[in-house]
Amino acid sequence: MSAPDVRGAVLVLNAGSSSLKYQLLEPHSAAVLASGIVERIGDDDAGATHTAGDETAEFHGALADQHAALETALSLFRETGIDLGGAGLAAVGHRLVHGGKDFYRPTLVDDGVVDEIERISDLAPLHNPVNLAGIVAMRKLLPDVPSVAVFDTAFFHDLPAAASTYAIDREVAQQYSIRRYGFHGTSHQYVSERVTEYLGRDATSVNQIVLHLGNGASASAIRGGKPIDTSMGMTPMEGLVMGTRSGDIDPGVLTYLQRVGGFDAAEVDTLLNRNSGLRGLCGENDFRTIDRLISDGDDNARLAYDVYIHRLRSYIGAYLIGLGEVDAITFTAGVGENSPTVRADALDGLSRFGIHIDAERNTLRSKEARTISTDDSQVTVLVVPTNEELAIARQAFEVVEGQ
Image 1: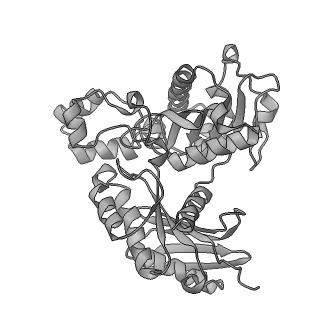
Image 2: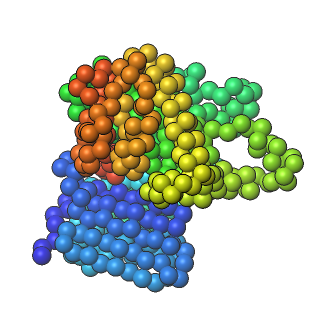
C-alpha cells in the first residue's frame, strides 16, 4: 500500500502527564491520515499504538519523557510509510490548556512564546508544563515544521467582566492573574459553530447552551457566536461535577480541611482533582459502570448520579436566564454524545421553557450531528460530536497560511 500524500497536513499533539495522543489530519477535508497514542510515559513498560490507513504499528518498552515518546511516534510513522521530516507538513498543532491573559488566539511558537508559556505555567501546573514539553521536543525533532499553540482558554478570553471577575480583593486578583478563564474552549467553539451550520443560520442570530460532558465537564452560554458565561473558572476544577473533580465547592471546606484536618495545599489539590466528583462519591467515574451499579441497587452510585444531574440542571437553568432566549441546547463529548439517560434527565420537566425531548430520537446512536428534540420544540436539542483535533488542525493551518 502506498503512503498517503500528507503535504499540507497538520500533526495535532495532545501531550499529557503520562500519555501522548496524536492525529495527522488534512484540515480542509477533515480526513484523518494517521493517529496514535503513547501511554505510560516515564515507565519501563510504556506502549504505543499507531494506525495509518490499513497499516498498524506498535511499540513496547521504556520511554523516559515526552521527547522519547515523540521520537517513538515519528518512528512508527516511518514504519507505516510516512516520513514526517520530509513530508511537507504544514504545521504541528499543540493543545495548550492555559493561555493566561495574553494568549487568546492560535499562536506561532518561537523562543519568546516558549518562555512566556513557561512563565504562566503556575496557572495550570498539572497541564501546561507537559504541554510545553511536547512543544520543545517537537521543535527539536522537526525544526523545519512550524509549531502552533492552540489554547483551551482562548474562546473565553473576552467573557463579559461580570462573568470573568471573582469578587475578591481587586489588587490581589490583578497581582496573581485571578479571573475566570474557562476551559474546553476549543470544543465549545467547534461545537457551537457546527450547531449554526447544522441549523443553517448565521452565528450572530443564534443563542445556545453547549454542554461538554466527558470525564472533564463544562457548560457555556453563547450569544450570537460569543460566549457570555462558562462553568469552569481559573482552573478546570470549577463548575459541573466531573469524573474525578468536585466542581463547585464552598471555599470554606478547603480552609476547614487545612485548619482541622491538617491538609496541605498538595493534599487539597489531589482531593479535588483526583479523588472527588463521581469517583469520590461512588468509587467509579465511568458512566457505563455507574449505570450498572445503579441497576444493581447501589445507593452510592445513585447518589453520585443524582448529584451530577442536579449540578448540570442548575447550570442549564442559570444559562436559560442569562441568555433570556435560547435557540439550541447541545450535548457533546463522551457522556454527552453517548448517554441518552443523562440527556433526558438533564432536560426533564422543562416543557414550559419550550424544551421537548423526543424519546425515540434520543435513544438513537449515531456519529453524526443530530436533533433529539421534537419537531414542535421551541428549543432545538442536539447531539453534536466534538472534534477538538480537527479544530486545532484548522486553526494551526490558518496561522501558518497567514504568515
